[in-house]
Length: 429
Image 1 (cartoon, helix red, strand yellow):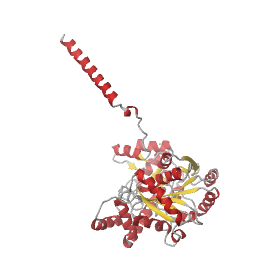
Image 2 (cartoon, rainbow, N blue to C red):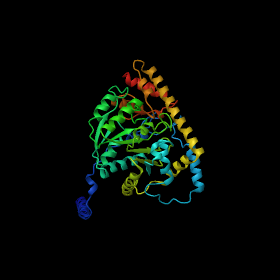
Image 3 (spheres, rainbow, N blue to C red):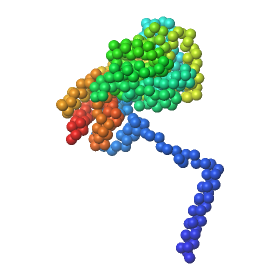
Image 4 (tube, rainbow, N blue to C red):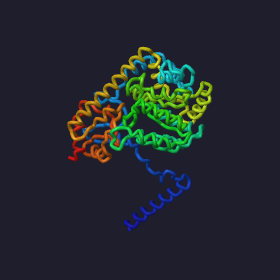
C-alpha cells in the first residue's frame, strides 16, 4: 500500500506539473522553443574551438588580427600616448553626434586622398564615424538599397566571409565575380572582367583597395586602370573596403586605386577601418566616406546616412574615435604611427618570405612562390579544405577551411612546426 501511495503521489505531482506548464504556456507562449541554432561564424567559430583545444603546441592562423613576434596583439605606442593625452584633457563621456567626432571626420578624406587631390580642393568628400569598417559597410549597403534603389552588389569570390551576410541583410542581391585562378596562384583577371561586364547599369561593385581578404592578391596598376574603365563603361557604383591602409606599401601610397576612381567627378563610397593599422580592434573605429560629383550634393547624402545610423546604433563609440583623432592631428603621434605601421608591414613581409623558404624545404616538389606576390596579413595558401581540416584535427594548426592563413600569426616559435605539419599533410604522410 505504501508503494502504491508513493506511486500515486508521483503521478499526481507529475499531473500537477503538466497542468501548471499548460497553464503557463496559455498565458506566456514559449516562442523560443522551436528556434533553430544559427551556424557558427566560419572564423570566430574556429576561434572558439581553438580556445577549447587543450594542446599546448596549437597554432592559430585564423582571425585577422595582427600579432607581433611574441604572438601578442600589441597596443601601439602612438595609441598609448594618445590615451595619456585624453586622460588629462577629456572632461566628459557624453554622447557623440550621430555622425561622430567632427575632428575625426575632418581627418579622414585627407588621410585617404592626401593634401593635394582635387577631391579635397573641390570639397567633394565627407566622412562619418562608424563602429569599425563593418558598420560602414552595413550603412552603405542600406543607403544603396533603401535610398538609391540599388538592387544588386557584385563582390569578389572569394571575399571576406562577412561581406555576403552584411549586404544580404541590407536586402541587396549578391552577385559574384571570380577572383583567383583555379590553382590559387594568382588573379584570373580575364574571367573577373568578363563577369563584371554582365553587371547592369546602377549595380554596385565592392572592391578591396589593397591587401585583398582573403587571398592577398591585389590588382596591378594596369589592371586597376582596366577595371576603372570597365566600371565606368557599365555605369556601376564603386564601393571600396579599405581596411588595411599602410599594410601594402605605405599609408600614403596605398589609397592610389581610390584616387584613380575619384577622378573626373566620379562618385564612390569608401569604408575605412582602424582596427589593423592602429590596433584598435576592440575600440571599433571606422569611417564611411562619400565622394560626390560636387560639394553641394554632400549634405543630402550625409543626412540620409545619419538617418540610417540613428536606427542602428544612434551614435558611434567615443574613446576609439578620440584616440584616432588625437593620433591623426598630433604631428609627433602621426609620425610615430607611420613608423609603427611600417614596422608591422615589414614584419609581415619578412615572415612571408621565411614561410615560403621553409615550405620549400618541407615540400620541394611544389612551388609556393605565389605567396610572395601577395600583400597584407592574409595568404591564400592553396591548401584544400580537406587539408585544412586535417591540419586542425590532427596537428592543432588552425586556419580557415578555404586555406586562408593569417601570416602575422606565424613567428619564430611556430614556423618550423607549421611547415613540417603542412609538409606531412601535403605529402599525405
